[in-house]
Image 1 (cartoon, rainbow, N blue to C red):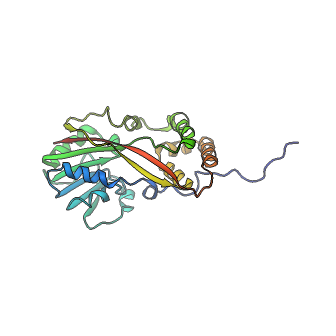
Image 2: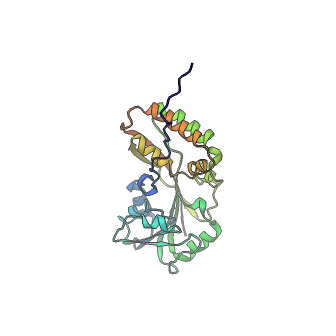
Image 3: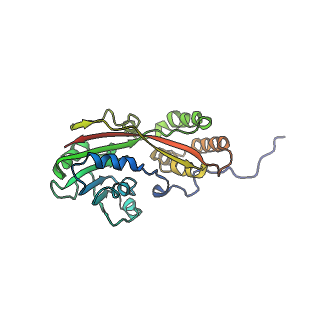
Length: 253
């Protein structure tokens, strides 16, 4: 007779770790330095779709003043205050900024959600002559070789159908996105962190695809992956390298 394990199966995705502010990766300082070097002056940068301010805070080290805008009050409420930053709730298609006031306008991991036509109209209104627009995204993360194959199968096969259609633009590095500005080549950059397994799974909890899979009752898919990756990870406190390629479309107004 086969014995039944009385212990309940571990639900890896119900651990309360889905905190966007905690688990979304920060951008490297070299990104803000590059954008500042392209801007005609350093008086004002506007970060649209700023979330909790992952890029906004970095821009504050380079610009006199930074405005972070996001339509989500919850995201703004979790942003870390900075004396150079003003956060406001506002959509990308209606920026609460004076005409011709911003030297740099950025959208980091956000532009695929925008009505681009309306956003670009606002960019032309808000940007100063010679100002800069940068659309930034980070691509599919890379793990260490012994973890990579299992993660790639999860991303491209098991969870793929739960991503919204806009995710395709991120996977393509925004390369197919309409960008009607004088474009410049950006240097190659990446985000690189050292995470333990709980931080890695916490980051996955911020994915819209994971949230949609949970809503669809497919915890089996999520927990199977978490079990597999945790076994491959080894000691849950072991810190492993996690990297994301940064994709940048940058142009002059």
